[in-house]
Structure formats: C-alpha cells, structure tokens
Amino acid sequence: MRCRNCKEKFEPIRFNQKYCLESECVRVWVESEKTKQWKKTKAKMKADLMTLSDYMKIAQQVFNKYIRERDKNKLCVSCEKPLGAKFDAGHYYSTKHKSVTFDEDNVHGQCVTCNQHKHGNLLNYQIGIAKRIGGDKVLELHVKAHETKKWTIEEIKEIIATYKQKIKEL
Image (cartoon, rainbow, N blue to C red; front, side, top):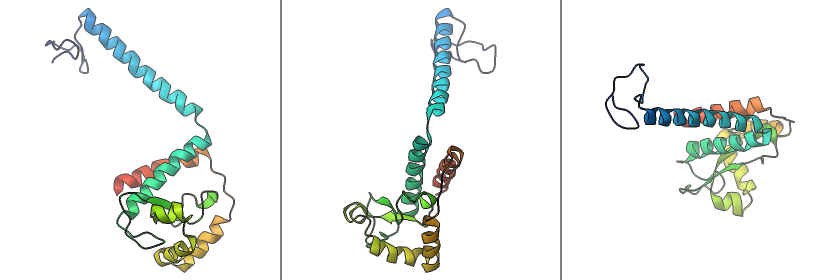
C-alpha cells in the first residue's frame, strides 16, 4: 500500500491505515482527523441551532424540486403551454395555508409567466387542477386548506427525507 502523504510504499499495521509512520505523514494524518472531527462537530452544532423556519425553507426547496421533476414533461397547469427548462412549482393554495403546503395535489408545474407575472393565474389553475386530479379532490383540497396545521421539526425532517427519496426514485 502507498502512503497518502509521501506516496511511499509501506506495510499497514491496521486494515484501514492510510498513512505510513514517518513523522511528517503522522502529522498530516492527525491534522486530517482533526479536520474531519471538526466538520462533524460543526455540522451537529449547526443542526442544533436550526429553527422550524429553517427546516421549513429546506423542506419547501426539496418539495418544489420533487414537483419540478414530477411535472417536467407536462404542460403548465394554468395555460397548458409546454413547460420550458425553467418553471415553477405553483401552489393553488399559497404556502400560507400550512395544511396543504406539502400536498402534492395542491402543487403543480406552472410556467413562470402564469405563476409570477399573472399571480398564479388562479382561474385557469382551478380549471387545470380539476382536469388533473378531479373535482372531488379539488373540493377535498379546499376543505383541507382551511384546516389549522402547526408543523413540528420532526414532521418537517420526515417530509425532507420523504421527498429526497422520491426525487431519487424519479
């Protein structure tokens, strides 16, 4: 085996030994281990400082990425034009309605023009969403949207993990 630092051949004492026992190589090895440990500690400290709001932002990004992957070959839900390379994950009920923020029936691929410049183009969105999921589900969505929901950090972490997995599966 060759040392990661000096590249000289050596006989490892342990199966996972990556550096020879020359003083310079041992010093480099100790420094690299310190760096690894600091990165782990820093990541844990950062996670401990994260608030519900921080987790919500991450969950929204992951969820929207999933919606974009899911709908990339569909038409805009509002104007039925082909979605280009850049499009939004448009919410029928805005993210102010916490109970449907991460509801897949509430969020569909929407062109930037409809979502941002026409403020969601909601009348056409309602027609498009009814075509996609059916009128009964739109009514269920309406009822669900007006329920009160308070997310916990654990629920949001689960949503993040779920949608990261769904993205991998697509």
